Each structure stands twice: as C-alpha cells, then as structure tokens.
Length: 179
Image 1 (cartoon, rainbow, N blue to C red):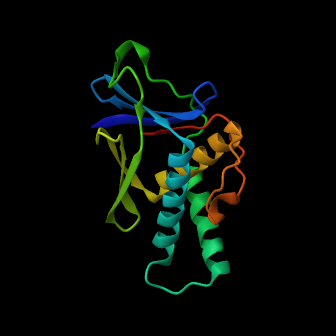
Image 2: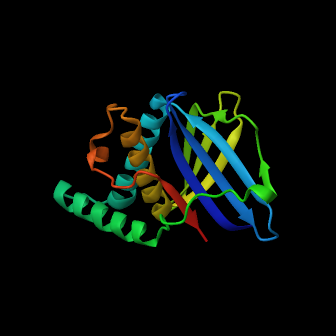
C-alpha cells in the first residue's frame, strides 16, 4: 500500500523523448521508482486514449450536444485539477529508493481497461510486455492529461494531437503527488 504516489514527465532533448518517472512511497518508508521513455508516437496515442476516456465517461449512453459536452469536460477538468498537488516538487527520496530498472523502459504499448465508471487501469508496456499497471480515476486522468500536454508543449513537438487536446496548459514542470 502506498502512502504517497508521484508522477513526473520531463522532456529530455538528447533522447527527443519524454522521461516518465513514477514513484510510490510505502508506509514503512521505502520508495519504489519506475522509469519509462515515451516516444512522440506513443505520446500521441496516449493523449488520444485519455481524451477518449474523458469523453466516453461523460457521454455514457446519453446523447449530449457538443457544446454541453465541452462544458461538462471543462467543469470536470477544473474539479479534478483543483484536487491535484502540482506544487510539490517530484522527489523520489533517494536514500530509500529502489530503482525498478536502471535503464528506463521504452514504452510501446498502452492498454486501457475500464474497472468501473470513471475508474481505469492503464498499462504501460514494452514490446516484451514488461511494465506497470496504474489504477486511475478520472481525476488522475485529467492530471495526466495536463502534465502530458505541458511536456509536449515544452518539447516543441508540434505533433498532431486529437482535436480535444488543443487547449493550452500553463505548467512547464509537470509533476504530481497524491496522498
């Protein structure tokens, strides 16, 4: 069981990739840190998947007018982001950290499974099927989206994104912590 969960996206220019770090501080004081490389292609797939989760979660089985859907997404996003801690600097407690792999895994597969309404399991996997599963509620999904879009903007990738992901994000050092 985790006492604290942190996520950090950082653009590494020499690799021209995003470096994703996820740490879990355990109740007994230990820290596990997972590291991943995300390519432009994968990031585009990831953003499209996030946007689809958000839209599908809101629309459900109902027919919603596009303007109403946009208003509902904005309200849900504001609510979710107000609960996230973007002010705490990412820190994987180096003294007690256990690095899961010295070299970051290169993520090439994203699997998304719906657990229940607005709750999902995101699997970040290598081509060898190694990786991590993250259980994410809709609040975490919105936070991941904000951090990912900020990282893409910082990278200057100008890649095609889903039509939903065109809004601007202000954060330049995306990092999040959940307690």
